[in-house]
Length: 155
Image (cartoon, rainbow, N blue to C red; front, top):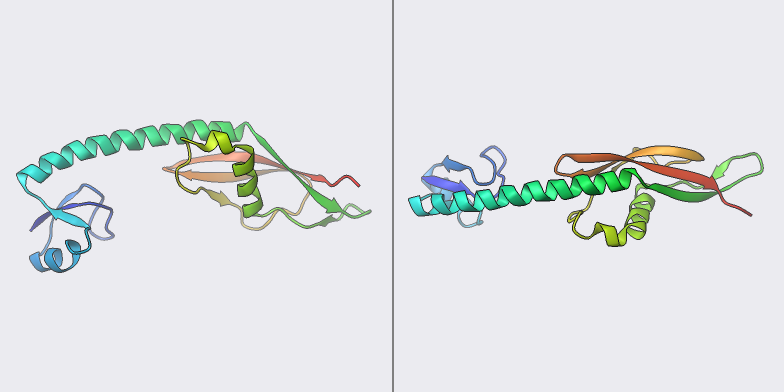
């Protein structure tokens, strides 16, 4: 049976692919879960229209993410931590702290750029004063580095 994939399916294909699968697999698994629809001449024509619109939207989303990535890379995100008399640092800055600061500082700028949550590449919390570069993955293959500055808390 020929089917059109309505989303990416592991070991089968990507969204909008036309695939031939066994009838039982289509009827008993794929169709009831809404993962595919049966491929007919009419649905294939509809697919081409949907695919073109989806690709246009994907390109627009990626462009928006690239604009936002540039905006992020130009920003400095400052944090303060308590320090001891000998310069030792008490506390740390985590992924969640950075994410919260980005949302707080750029709240109005986020609209139209980031629809989904983004990932912060940070193996462990930052526990040193000064400048750190942190990679942000915005999705759709768009990544950028941001500047995180940690200063001592003024008494």
